[in-house]
Amino acid sequence: MSTLLQVKNITKIYPNQPKPSLDNVSFEVAQGEFLGIMGASGSGKTTLLNVLSTIDVPTNGHIVMGKIHIEKLGQKQAADFRKNNLGFIFQEYFLLDSLTVRENIAVPLTLLHKPAQEIDRKVKELAELFGIDSQLKKYPSELSGGQRQRVAAARAMVKRPPLIFADEPTGALDSSSATELLTALKEVNHTLGTTILMVTHDPYAASYTDRILYFKDGHIISELQRHNSERRCFYEAIMQESARQDEKR
Image 1 (cartoon, helix red, strand yellow):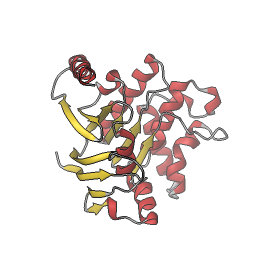
Image 2 (cartoon, one colour; image 1 turned 135 degrees about the vertical axis):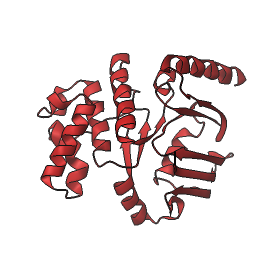
Image 3 (tube, one colour; image 1 turned 180 degrees about the horizontal axis):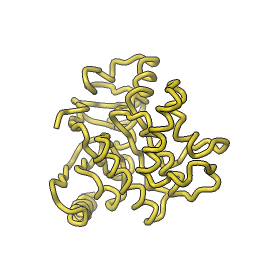
Image 4 (tube, one colour; image 1 turned 90 degrees about the horizontal axis):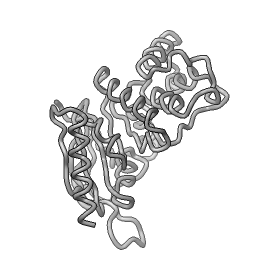
């Protein structure tokens, strides 16, 4: 697999903070990879997401996607980069209540002034992948929480960005809804080759990824690879590693 994202010696220091939020962090993300980021509160997960997604700027280091040095982008360049290259899934849905499901999913393409036929085709494709094709004419208020999150995920992916950032996407869902979302994310990752970087505290959610980086005090302290193991076996390995990390606290 080719490399999509290179993170080189990233450090992030905030004023009046005794320790760096990120301290000389380096790793690569392969094209088409589903990468999980785990760690306790304050470990640097959120800071990492903000820095990689151009919401914040690192104090030192380099972030390279393709031939673009993300850390060097100005404010307008960063906004354009996010619009054209990144998708976001949050714990909150951020759907527009006055729009139908179809219209909510289509928002990114509408803002890019894409042709109506292209919008219709891509919305239908993503709606089918996320199992919400029968809900397209409904409004968010008529949906369950799990359905709303799948609408939000479809919206994030409808413009086919090379990289999706998912920040605790199952945090507000029950176990059944979480499974539906994670299964759909894995299917989209496999079918469309979309690269996903997901921050989660949940070992079950993490078991759907290909690889996990564990963070503590702004450092990567361990890594787990799924390889070709079954998801259940990977889940057990994650639980063991999480227990080992808890013992070290």
